[in-house]
Length: 476
Image (cartoon, rainbow, N blue to C red; front, side, top):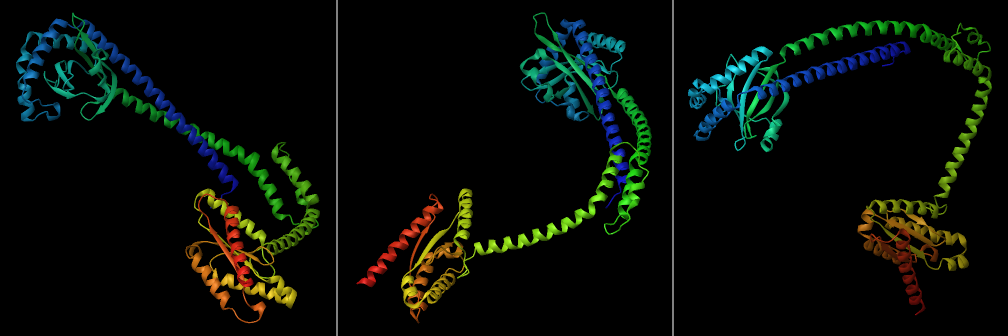
């Protein structure tokens, strides 16, 4: 879909304003949440330290000992996940008598008095059993559905450090669960007279109210930003339309009516553009361009035709340079480029090729006896037989009587068969001396280590040996 500059500018302004508003909202939300979370964490941590400091440690030690004695002897331990089931009720019933103990009553009253003064969600004491990695409630100051003594919760992964070092306690952490909503929880170790950790003074502070207030503030903030964004967009669009779009439309209209074939293009000289900025500079440049454009067009036409002719000539020369004029197969230059491609394949590790050398015998004798025209016929006959035999491989004429074949694929897999076919066809050729095919053949295959020149030299050497044998045979 094609959009005008006006639409693109409007979209750009709105997009930038929207992005800035969104970024501002996200940063503000994050900053507010960070401050609130830090404040609540500090409050929970401070209060847990206070509770741990004022708690009656002797009664806490006695209550813990009584609960852990039952915990250790219990045949089946049931966690709070099974709350309300007969199994859970039976397990918790083992500790029920402890709720009437003087230690439990005193500690619960002490926690409730601190809880009421500080307006927190809940204070409670807990112990951690390292062998079973269990979180065990000792007493809970909640007025509704308190966790009974002996109640078990699994230890959160974030608090597993205290298994190795009980003194780290429960650093403040925030959770959002279905039954309790947003809570910040912290726990400080309660130390006995001997310096060992008896239990942990735990604090739960509800964050539901502050989270609701955060949401309301963010909504108000988003509304205010939206209103400011709309005002900024309107003012920006009006300014862009006045100082950018209108002058550009004038230039566009004048350019649309301009024609290189028209003698009168005075419209460009009388546009009301005096903005003293880049647009006015563009207008001045267009006026200068109009003064010279006719001459440029003529020069461009001449240059284009010359370049076209030069390119055609270069293509023709390139084709001639890569093609042997007599036989139509590749030239020495074409082979050199093929060798470069073979080197690239070797560098990639996927080269699989061979080189076959074919050298004609008695070409000089034919030229001297029957003339060079008949010698050319002999060259063409030999080349035709090579191309017919190695029909899947490129053939190159290297010199007057020498041919090179780069074999791949099917010709590579059947190279010895192809060479035998060539020899048999050459031996079967009949007719005048220049119509027969008499040539020596040698080949070499790439072994994964040597270079293209190495393969070429091995093939050339084997061809030369065969050539010598053929001469010796005729001598005998």
